[in-house]
Length: 426
Ligand SMILES: *Cc1c(COP(=O)(O)O)cnc(C)c1O
Image: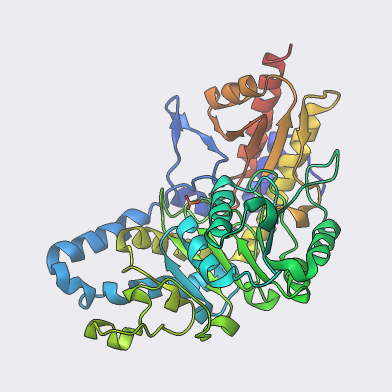
């Protein structure tokens, strides 16, 4: 695409954008009494205006029906989570039976690890990305200890080559091969939260399986950001949160994928609860856990109706927009951001884009390593009404989302970035 560093070009892109009307369906946060430019959907997505009505609906059912709401009304809570299944399956590329919405992300990660990290003999190792999101690191560290291993003996962390910021697929695949018969599990992000790199989930899954290991992904930064094909890629399990790109509110619920080949495997250990018990006889309250078939059999507690109501409102927008349309816009929008960052930065050596330059190897986020006055630059951007985020030691993450961000916002951002770079110069 031939980009231009002009407001007119940006506005023309917006006019031709088939998804442009979605912006008005979200609330815009305010800075200095003006709409902020919000590029933090990778951390907490904006609120869909429709969410309140879905929430009110369940609050009203609770007021009117109280306990009867579990089985009565137009959205009985007993099966409420199922209202989310089809849309969630479309977002991650799964069969409906492979998906369930429940709990929160790290909790679900633990539940999946109980079933899918099953060290045996010398096959005890887990491959993960070095510098993974801390919650994933802590989950893994404590899981391997739970099995009686020291983290240093069981966890293999992958780091980029000297002088590089992202992992090369060939190196990931080689590490999997090298671990060979010692490898029990590969657990990676679908997209690295820090660099924005998309991993080749299909190739990693294939290599993991060839080594005889199980392969799972944390899709916190991938779900709702890039199209996924978990079923076709043969991924064993995956988890994601819904409050980042999926715009389902702070502390929102989470999703789980379990490939259908594991759906009815009674040999998989799991930590069960009544909501995963055969729904037909759940209220007989009898002894002996009988898991529901598919991902639903991993449910533990009864569904969190209020966060799920918000999630439902948001998923409807994703169905309306379509992941492929979102991705098509996203590649252009983030490409434009990359082009403008390069353009305003010409001749300087303050910023380095550490996100892959190849659009196929990234989602919507661009991470800029700031080599001088990183904090000051970040503070100036925030003061000017740009909401981005700062990750230690010196990275600013900028994530224009295709659902509610515009080309004009990306253009305005670059103007302000230019001014702020001048202002913080040594
Ligand atoms: C956001 C994020 C989390 C957060 O976990 P919660 O359990 O939802 O608090 C965990 N892992 C990754 C990779 C994330 O990006």
